[in-house]
Length: 68
Image (cartoon, rainbow, N blue to C red; front, side, top):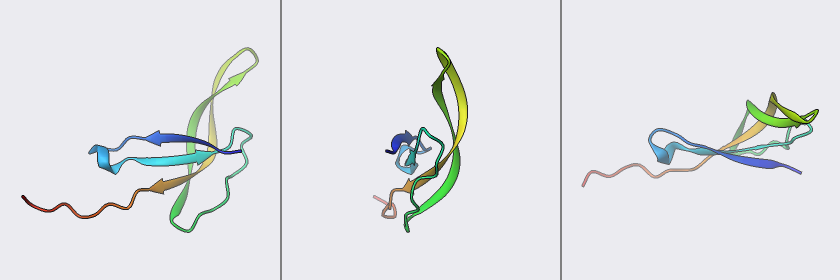
């Protein structure tokens, strides 16, 4: 099962969503996405630990800005 996290952008409309698996297995590839490594915090031995996991990064399709 995949987990997801929103990655904010600057400006905010440039944010994206990353899907990753807590077991460290790469999620299935998607045609409209890129694959990257993501640092997440996972529970370990009664505490927490930062871990790098493969993730699929979906970028929202944005229309161009129009001048007002």
